[in-house]
Image (cartoon, rainbow, N blue to C red; front, side, top):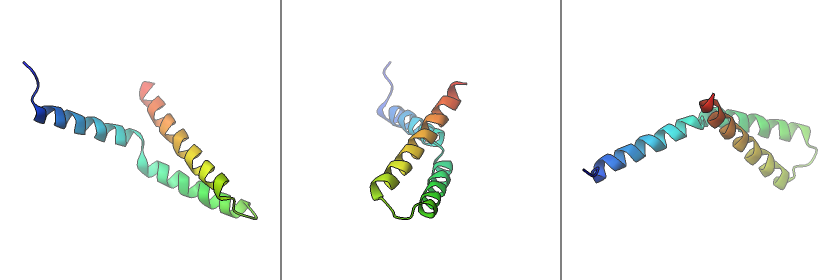
Length: 72
């Protein structure tokens, strides 16, 4: 009647794996690297707060785009 603990763990593992693939980690890494290089080339001085903000915002934007792609 109730699912076993092992089947719940397998289902959870598959769900986490599917979500991880949805976030497209390779694309995120490539875009973050590109943003970092563009930031370093364009800026005369490096402001660490702005650099972190650019990386975090870019990462969140790509993750958001990946999850919205699933809905279409």
